[in-house]
Amino acid sequence: MPKYLVEASYNIDGIKGLKSQGGSARVAATKSLIEALGGTLESFYFAFGENDAFIVADMPDNATVAAVQMAVNGSGAIRSRTVVLLTPQEIDEAAKRDVPFHPPG
Image 1 (cartoon, rainbow, N blue to C red):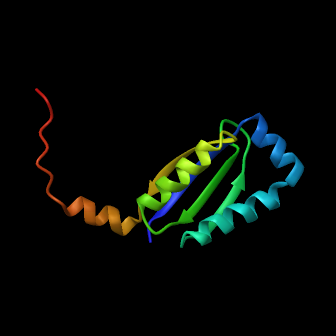
Image 2: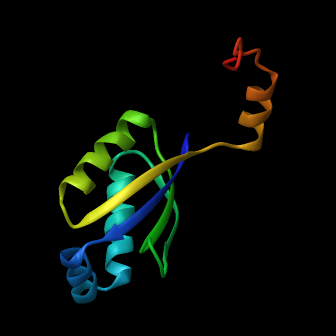
């Protein structure tokens, strides 16, 4: 199952909700959402800086993740960015493929 890293930042409304419900409630809600869509939550960490949370999850496919992104970002309370993570074996496979690329010039 593909693995994804989600970087999330809360806006003022999201922070107010986080303060009222707490971090454990946000993790539980995230885990419930991911599992309802056939995925598994690997980790959820809150952080300082540009991003407020980092989430790693296994999800069934890109379309499922895109649907989650639309719902989450569409809420207006959170801005998130998703990165597809690759295993070393996937990179090994990619390195063996012939790609007919020629740089300009």
